Image (cartoon, rainbow, N blue to C red; front, side, top):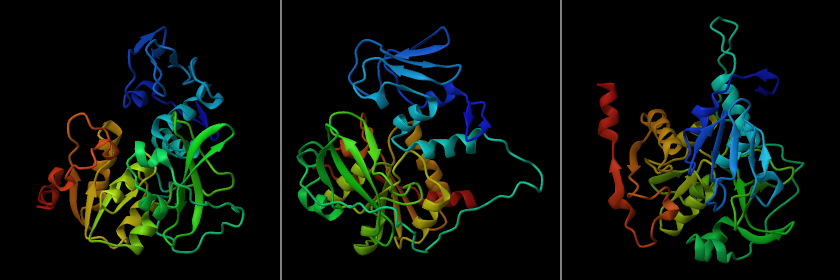
Length: 315
């Protein structure tokens, strides 16, 4: 598969193995299953394992009906197209073993980004969906300046992404009746930022939770925990650099309770164990992410201090 001019030998089965597909079977070099994006009892979703193209015959929206493998991973990972390209190139791209291969390391850039093209903004409106369905109360919605509106016939919530200084860089819109999401036109890519970091800096506590999704982070704030979100099921050097200067003393890793989330959680432990006290949230059985937790759960009872285990790596 060609990605940004590079021909990549992508292992489609390996990439899809990290996700759950109900009633899945492989037939004639195609993965057939129920749709992972909507309620579906009769398999109507298929992925061509030779070229990565996919189709969902029961989808309502054009961007959910078919596409290439990059668009599929973007939907499964809840991230953007560019981020998936970065991931695939990093994993499957050509690697050089000589001095011509420059290992470019991302470092924290505290300069203010030029965002002159982005003229948009968010005007807060109460979201019944975020409150009654997702458990994010009005106070936290106001703090994060979220909105609920109808765009092109799709009822959605708008969630602003800000840089560490509180400057709006993008708005992510999520459908409230399906998994459709998109970003505001002319916004900056979110991949090198942390959702909620600007608010953590303003309302800093010794402990900071790390999750994958924006809604997970806002839900934790509702429960009295300070949290930031990666925005997807991966973390990069820029985000790690931001975490290292966030000012927290303890990091609680609460990424999703699935293969991708566990892999991201392990990477966070490995990269941050020299800088923070590290704790890990143990999801109760059957719970995929923190937003599925009951509002009255005592989160600290499920937090496990693993710093001694990690320090053992240096002994």
